[in-house]
Image (cartoon, rainbow, N blue to C red; front, side):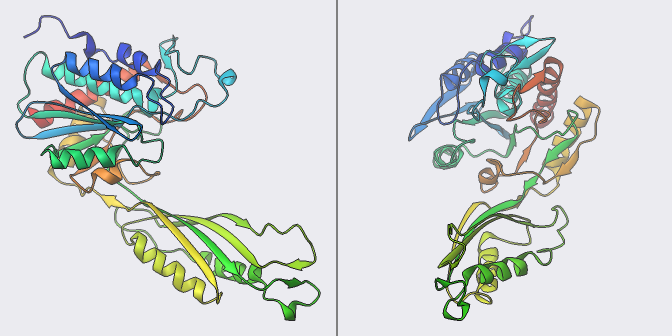
Length: 380
């Protein structure tokens, strides 16, 4: 047993070191090296995994069950206008007990908090089960050479965990409010309706694609797609662009284009919604193209013993009984859900992606305490 806590048991110094790496996706800028060195100092076996230009890592300590994994990312979004920041976006400055920097809450702070939790839980010992970390440098980017590839490597090397906790910022205002146990799927579609170009004064000689597109969009948005499900809110369909690109006022264009995004619940799949879009469009346009990309399918980790353990540990540590939720955008949990049960819990996300992104030191340390409670609950 150690007489003194390991230096890494306080997350602040590691969080500062990570923030000082300008790891704007896809750049790494040394962030993964900082993390690898910290984990090695705790006794983790760290594997560097580079796919394409992306730096990732998998680290594990222990060989037994249960195997609990923490997933996160060291890449961050661009800082925007650096002159608008009151602290350097990559300085890791502490001012009035608040840590400033791009990635402070999304999500270098959570990574440092989990390392601190692991340091406190291990205290120089080998865990009764196993603790691992899946950390990518490609979450804020295309998400092609990051978590997806690491998971494939983990499966090939018999490293899939029993449960995974993703450190995305889940809490709206107070630490402990929300655990995400699922996410909606996301579909992007580009609709191109083809017509026949002609003079606006002689519409009988043309086929106006704008009119067809407008009627199709009206049909798609006339009523809610659904009323939601037990754990998910109603599916949202939002038209994000309508474009004709016609500089003339007296010409009926040859085509009209619209884009839309759908955030969908577990009553649908990307394939079923694509079929619905196609069938609806066919009622209003004889000739059209529909290009669809699925950012992720919806997923749900159904409440049960593992979710109950997670929820109780967080409630004990924070004094708040967290709500189980599935709202928000997508995260890498959508990939992890294909391999094992997964949930998300992290810092308050009120300043993520904003100028002066920041986290109070007290909140960072309390998150480390919550993660420590989670490890103790699963592995003790």
